[in-house]
Image 1 (cartoon, rainbow, N blue to C red):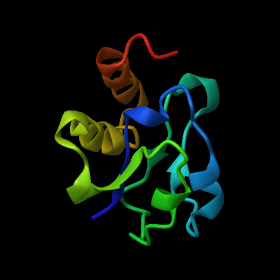
Image 2: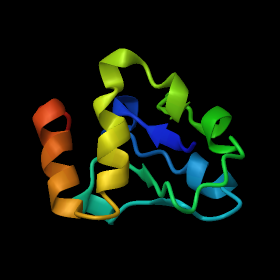
Image 3: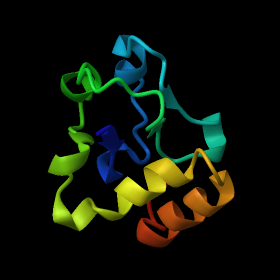
Length: 97
């Protein structure tokens, strides 16, 4: 299991979760991304990121709300095909800037 960053992160991208992650598995490419991503292969499931997020955007994979379930796929996809992941985020939340 891993942790997933969801829609509330969009346009916020508060990096508190990055600061507390002991394995540095949370990434983005700056302005190219509207959201941060957790590497599912590097995440050690410690949960330190979840309470650090001021907008409650981070969930354990099994706890992602149904209305945000698309972010589970998007999160992993970013580490394989960043452009495809960005397109999916844009499709879900096109007005979020």
